[in-house]
Amino acid sequence: MKTISDILSCLTEDEKRLHEEIIEECLEREALLNSNREAIIKNTQKLGILAEKIVDDIENFNQIFTALSELEKELKQKHDRLKLLSIPEEKFFHG
Image 1: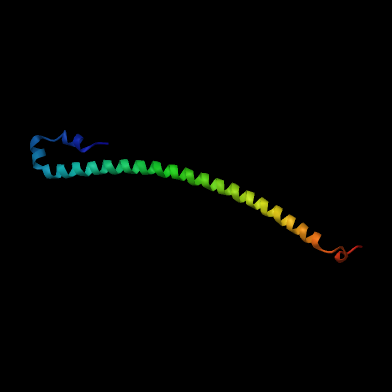
Image 2: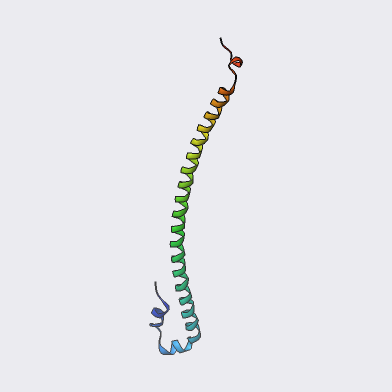
């Protein structure tokens, strides 16, 4: 990618003097663009790291919820068994 300095190297001294204000503004904007490009690169890297952390957290939550689901099933089975055990014998139908 050509820079302002690359373009300036093609101009004569008279052209540089004639367009001095525009050249100065272009150099300032180029510096701002470079600064913004660096910030975008850094922020993109940070986003990548955060995205990986989010994926890891989701996987951890999935494991936790799967374990909780299994525990809930076990507790329901125990609860149902205790309910049956608490029913008096005479309430059962004996065929």
